[in-house]
Length: 453
Ligand SMILES: Cc1ncc(COP(=O)(O)O)c(C=O)c1O
Image 1 (tube, rainbow, N blue to C red):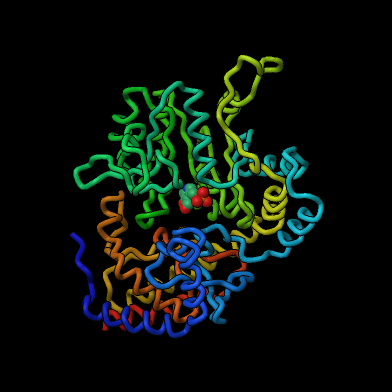
Image 2 (spheres, protein in one colour):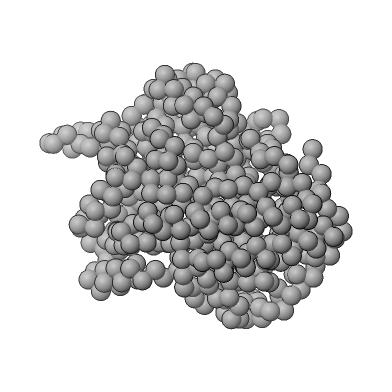
């Protein structure tokens, strides 16, 4: 049972003071928000831009490198980096150049170009999967991976791990309730949404085997480590081997979603941990925030998409694709990103700064005498408000302490630091330097000092 290690009245006091300073320093954002409310639900172009935060939304003027500025002129060192989609930083010059050129030369033809071939080849090299397809988002890459797996296996059910996030599509918007029943996660979903998904607790190979045993599962979709929703859930030794063995035994497709975990290095955790999936899905930072999703697959999986010559009529074609999928603009951005921004060297730089961030967070919680845990996840570091890391979503939700995270976020924002939204913690983006990391650590330290005093 989670017990806060601080005085809740002190937290309320800090939050009230910080909320007042936040609003006072952002009159232009507030005015734009009020204007936006007349033409958009919640006053923003997409509801999450309001609902992801409990403070008023910031309206942005520009970003460069690891920092951005709001319309009131406040500057932030950014550790959320648009929920990982701007890991390469804002306006990286090679991407600006490639995208500008592509727009000037025509950005969409509904025909392929050479950049698409280059990007598929590079992803094949990074993830050791030979064939690739493209969408406009990671959500859509996951949706298509499921369709392909259903076509291959002739089965309907999808297995995921409780505490996952893979995008806003029906099969993924379910969770386990306190009694272990599968229930819809949000509104607007069909009443039978829970019937095609089976949810298993992370790090429970026995439950996984039981879920696959009826041999009606098309695909297991998971991140190699769960980084969204419930903090960071790391796999225990042997978990991925058990997952691969169980999916092989039951002829189930295994897909790793590297949308977030790709920040650990080229080829993500698939390469680092020598994982052996049938499909890898990704998106977000691969094209520096220009919309692009991708999924890679083995030759056997690709067979479901490849039509034998001359048999198009009469052959079932898997329902994939969209008018703008794989467009030359996204491909130009992805090529420049992988060739010049997300290179081996830059990953090493962010990992070193990620270590510095974790050291700083750890030092701050030790000095304040708080029984919390700092974690290290390559460029991503963070804090669990408990003495040990959670093993599964049940433990993760228990320690989440939303009021504490909200107070920390607004305290940091008022000191020029933009914190990660809920998940595996702040990420050091490629163009960040020691000044950014030290700014985070200083602001975090002053928060925990005041909280614990
Ligand atoms: C692991 C993972 N997969 C997929 C997605 C969906 O990405 P998008 O919203 O860009 O489609 C997310 C988004 O947070 C994610 O964290």
